[in-house]
Length: 70
Length: 263
Image (cartoon, rainbow over all chains, first blue to last red; front, side, top):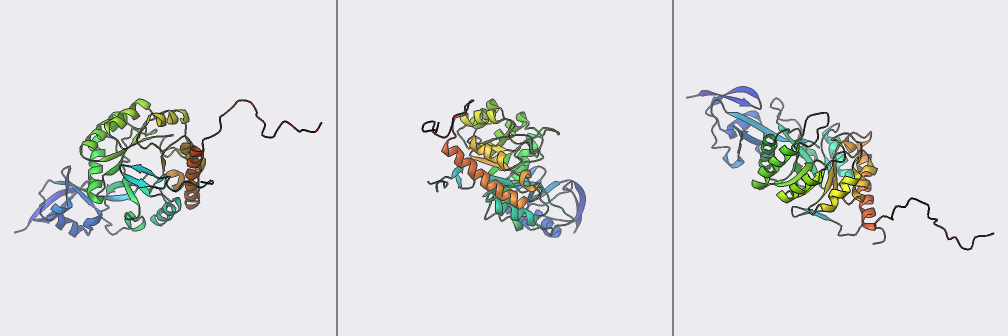
């Protein structure tokens, strides 16, 4: 049975069909796991845990990567 | 050495050895292609990078890694834009997860227009990061007491500013930079303030182990030429430091013999 999961993703409220893991979310977003890092509710999600980290409504996620900077 | 830099004139930070004494930022370039070309021309082996939210509406946008190869360059993640210790620590934990690197550049900044290092925030973040296993190269005020404390806390490099970030004013504090250099046992860099090649040379002549800069190259009319100029200036300044400059004197001292003059 599918239930919607509502997340704050990089500051934007977004809803996804659940259940959804971090790995699933990155795949839906079209992001390469190799080049990003994910923080969930201000805690790092280690890359090795993406598949088993299930997201819950109300989670705040930050997905970041490297850009040019001084 | 006949004027050449000695072959083993390398420097080591946190156990990593480098031959280039120029660290360059990767920000403020026209595009990623120019970023890659300027960095190659600079000869730098370490590049600073920022950590930012992925643009979710454009996940396939070109990425820095495609133009500045992390296998070839040591990425030094920074905390630019962080104004609190908590933001800085979170940012670098993300950087460590994204890249696997624990060598980082910490900067906790005060408000514009100076963006001067916020030292209470810097101390708080440095302590948390060191405890968490990071190797912290720290951007700091040109304050010998603060710099000493950061070194004693375990920061792996101390990096005071020569002038405000992006100002290009050159070293406004040569005497203080020299003073802090003298007391510092870990790698010592000038970070911020360099505007042109001579500024970088001055920093090296004062005995810095390396110089960190970004805007001076990125905002030059021809960044690739300026990158080359910086490379040469760093080498010239380093060589002058190793050579040992002549003493300054207030009066003249003729260079030609005073004997044998025609009368």
